Length: 368
Image (cartoon, rainbow, N blue to C red):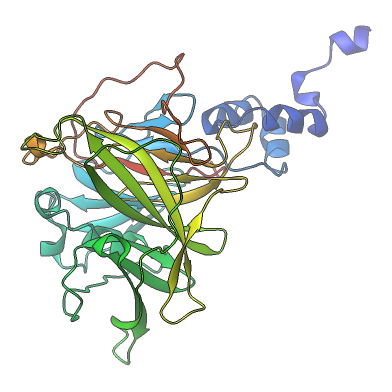
């Protein structure tokens, strides 16, 4: 008993430490545990752990931890506009026009100063919603970050809804899912990457699911592409408004439903097939970053659910780049059609503050 009372916390068996870590999904809590002593830090690095839950980058440069609602402040690029993310990397446009990628967890950085400056004008991104120029850079995982200009190609006269990097190719969806095009990255003798249109998928879904909840008479549809367990998914977000007679359809908007489709590339032309469940995964969707993520009780992420934020502007805010990501956010269950708040009732909802960042998902790693 005397020896037991004099034992140090640093002598905690690695097996017990692992059990503790499994109950600490938050990256911040894991970091605090590692900081207790050298022994805990060394043993913690040996434990196989599920990835920590995603964070939501806020406009003022802080991060919101999901689902506990904690606000995290981390050093980032000063005086720079954050235009998107990919995994644990953030894409920045600096005041001098220089572009860069930075990992706020490992502090690694990648300079992209050779990018054409006019494509990354922070003000024009909100006026024209030309996310291709932003997402086309950070969608290619570091260190292979390249400028993907698709403006020179003769594409159909559809608005580009979203792009995604899947199976070594870049896919773009047009016209609300009417057309899916593949852009192949080709490196020529001059070592400069080029793109070419190599395949198109037509035929919007022939089989539509019966939604659990009826839709409003008028809806706006936003489309996202996301890679999911070796499959390419298209997510349709239905945004309705309370007053159909309003001149500004997004003035009183709210997300009412989602539909998910899988691209079947085995047929010519390809087909969209309806998806009714996500298994043990959840989808985090957004204009600047979309990703599937393992769900489970250990991390508080709900399976068969779509996590969404407000990534669009109402027409009355068309000239204001500040948009509160929590203004129209939530968790949608694709099985029963129910929408629950993004944060639990016990969480303190952060006050909306402006800044130089766009709202985007970022996925922490344990390498800190």
